[in-house]
Image (cartoon, rainbow, N blue to C red; front, side):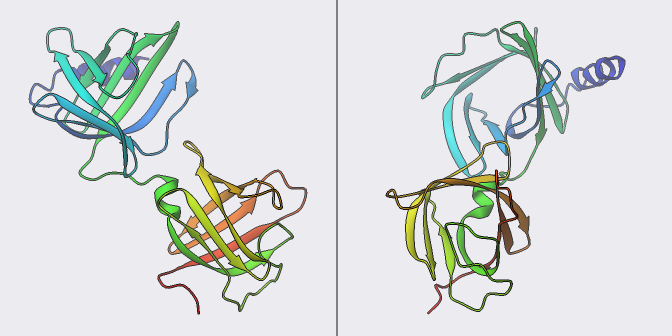
Length: 230
């Protein structure tokens, strides 16, 4: 607690710092529980407008005001719900900012850091065309094999639809990427294949999907490609 007070005092004393610019949420705490969203950001413009989003997707916009005497920050979203809580009390430095207030009896603390570019969500990273390299275990998609030498692929489109082409045929559907964890839900069209949930492991130009809530190991390893296989 003492260290937090020292940090807040240091931040508050930085008279040259400005709130204007792009800030990425580093941590969110509700009481003792951490609830940090993936790649959340807010940009404060000099004309007192603001916009917020996650990754490359902007989902909110509106205005902001800062009372410099009380350090109270009020954010209003033109396209969102009215915030009925008290304004945030903020402390700001050159590269870090802290927001605090009480919501429904809980102390809320948000730590943000200044950034020069938008962060990437798990949903941003998974976008694109991926060719199957390895399939372990049985699932609805792709035949099992330790080594694949086929033209099987999965295509995660920007509009949240996916296309799978494999030895099992062609499957279309929609997908949802979790807002806090590297997980993707595949929801195929029709009743022939049920929806399921996969954990995502990211490597450079590779992803590995691991079927969740399974009694056996089921994984699918892909590498990024830039043209559909012949």
